[in-house]
Length: 310
Ligand SMILES: Nc1ncnc2c1ncn2[C@@H]1O[C@H](COP(=O)(O)OP(=O)(O)OP(=O)(O)O)[C@@H](O)[C@H]1O
Ligand SMILES: [Mg+2]
Image (cartoon, rainbow, N blue to C red; front, side):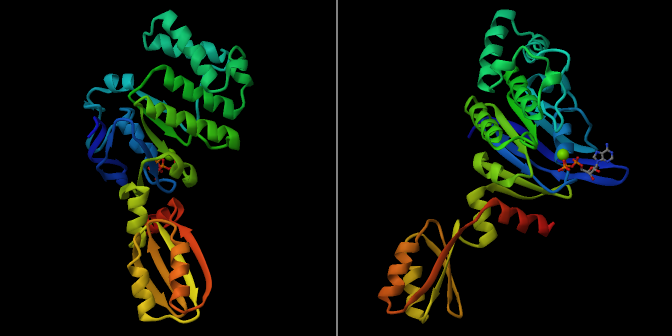
């Protein structure tokens, strides 16, 4: 088991009697990319602010790398990078100057900082405009600079709150790649987003928050399985004639989790794409295969199911 980077215990925040975050228990390990999801107003940003020590919990505790975010906010700030929903930079300074400033704040030796900053500007694709004033940057360019700014610090933990909103498709891909590279360098990432296909692409685990409570948490496979009572894929086969024997033979196929039937349809829950094998069994069983299609459980479906429950 890896080092625990984020831990919360019954973390709760109430505003004038309204509970924005309600008894939250999180545990996130080093190098994880954790997708933190939930509808508008679910409490995601509030949770991040408590972890950062920027707002005090009403009750419960938040720790980052073993430091209490409320009692040791300075220690926590030193090891956390935060890309807020709206990034703010010194607009009259260049990208390079902004990053230099961050390096100075984090007492990085000058020579080391210069080298690092040059490399990072290259990584985030801003080398050509590194010496232009940030006021001339587009939103996507500022977002890239935001990621470089976090990286300069070499934090243990990075909070990225909607980092890809308003970014063009190539930019999104670049930002997601950067996040994966950060996690390979053992930077733990909490990725808040409403763009579920992006989350699905890079997150090992997700947590779904609804009305301040964690309603589901786990890997995509696990949540998909739970939401569907079965495997990751669902195959729907339409057969001309359905028999008990046919259903039993399909059940025996390796990777099949469950078979349901209704009318001429067979609904097969399985762990991989077994369309070929299932088609062969149906035909060999002297039935006609009228149609077959496969659906993969995606985060969209998982999310809908759990956020409705709350
Ligand atoms: N300073 C505040 N005072 C009063 N209520 C607040 C304050 N900050 C947040 N809230 C309320 O707490 C709830 C959770 O807000 P939060 O910003 O954490 O949601 P979120 O999950 O980040 O939503 P979004 O997806 O829209 O960013 C909302 O109902 C919000 O109105
Ligand atoms: Mg938010």
